[in-house]
Length: 299
Image (cartoon, rainbow, N blue to C red; front, side, top):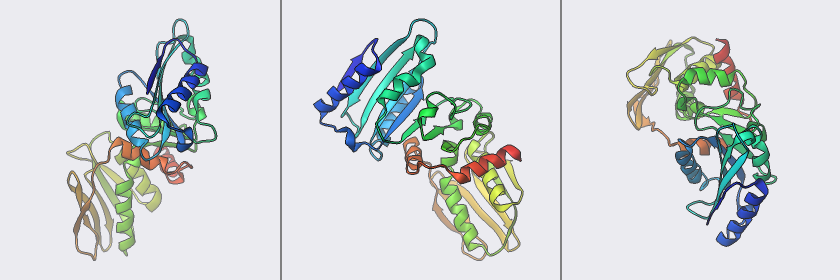
């Protein structure tokens, strides 16, 4: 069921949500968190579709927030949707005028009570997510440097204001690489002396991978320019030989460790919904990400 509200307020939206929930037979107790998606008119469609897909694994109340022109009289329009291709509920808020300066006052009454809150900026994030008015409502704050015009600059800018609960999806994209490298180093008997990461220019995930390796191994890691945008290879030098993980196709890579036979292992790209689902499985602070960002900013 969908209900459209024009020139409304938070109380009317809450009543419309109850009405839609009753009509759809969808009790709020089935939901585990509130996901706030702060976006714009250009990105809102794709972002909410992703959030709807995500809610199948993490049943949630999805609140899309579009902050319009801050000039003029305050105005709030909304769409409430329950029970359509989703295991949760969705609310789309369009906020304009003076109300854009107090958007959190609209969002706060609509959060699920006694449940975690996660905020995701699919595009350009605030410089300091934890100090942002909406960001302050959340335990977890997700940004995506890769979606900005200057990924490395954005990653570092947000990183300078890191607070527990912050994560960039560039870090989440590294999970398969980090797992393979951890497995490789568990099999290697020699200490790593140096290494290199090859990727396209301006790849924030590659930048984080270099910082992670340097902070954990305490050795220099070189970032090399590759022929493709994604990370194409990681080479770690040891006295016994090189540890090599090299992409050989869209869904697989060559895995080689000294003393073992080389083999091909899966390494495919994941969807945005899969990345978000991984982040929502843990709502506490990521200490390893914090250490990696700290190393990136001081190296």
